[in-house]
Image 1 (tube, rainbow, N blue to C red):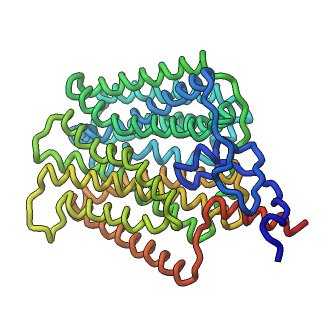
Image 2: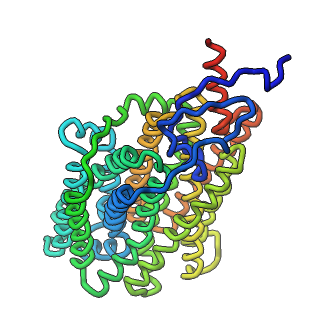
Image 3: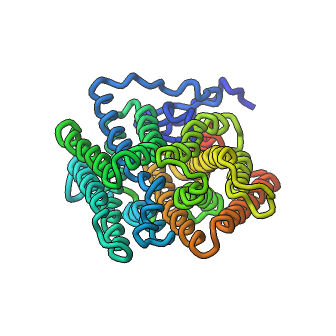
Length: 478
């Protein structure tokens, strides 16, 4: 048998942003357009290194980061104070839950369609329009303070949020593609900056909203953040370079990829994780009223989940790097969410009264568990999709990302609606028990999948293994 030295090098393969884990993003995203030769004794250490962002690229990425930051601030603004304001104005929990979840629902239904707008206008113009429309809607929402209560307020708020959601969908759907086109050699770094901007915006939004509401009234948060979005629109108009991009993936392509149990399970995990967060957004403020807290303090309590959600990302990413099977993280993350919903109300079989420090601890657990579910499921979906034979390129990444974004948006809407309905009809305590049941069912699924994979001795391959196997197949066909 020939030794490794006597074997010819394997054929080169084109590879794209295989984001199997955060630690690999820089290596794989930055080399999406390069060609790498793999031999039997080569390792991932030989992948091309990234270059520093140029000043022009840095300005470009920071501008998009501002758009993501301000949009995230606005999207998560309502949770600390709107439930109380809605009840004062004749809205039920179901109604104000629907209002809070409308932007996410619009992003879900419009994501397969919005990328096609690039046939009619350049991405720069579309992002500029999206920021402008969302900014105007933000300011208009503040003036709903003067609307007649009840049904009229509900319809007007839904309409304003629906249009704002269209603006947000445009920004989110075109921000990443034009960033990837402009920053060719550092896509991983640029992507992480946008992710960080969105995460920090979501984390700060409840506190900013609560403080502005406490000291400036109902209009203040919306006028302030609406103006921030309009400023972003002006900055985009004057400083964002013109750029072209390809049309996005069709829903048919996404559905074709999703017809696999492992991939579908990963997407369901992402959906449930985000729905748990939005369930909490709708229901937590009424639960905190028993402590008679100021709106600014309520906003700080909300940050507990967002803080651990953002800060635990590197930890989960490290596990994605080190573990041979990412799915082993699922039970740990899901158990954290189960423990959160058992303690936060607390559950009927726990014989103690609600305490603020336990609620904050529960929110830390929620952020930790939900982040673990989303990061690990998304990374596993990418690895498993390539191991199923899909090419490791930008198109595959876009398809997985489109499915992921759609499921997260759907989870946001369903969580907000479920929170409102359950609070209205069965109460907060029973609502949290329902979330425990959902997470427990998910735990059974993920443990069952782990045991099944172990029995069959199958599982997602690592990045290098996947690319090597593709190379072997290509070589054997010659």
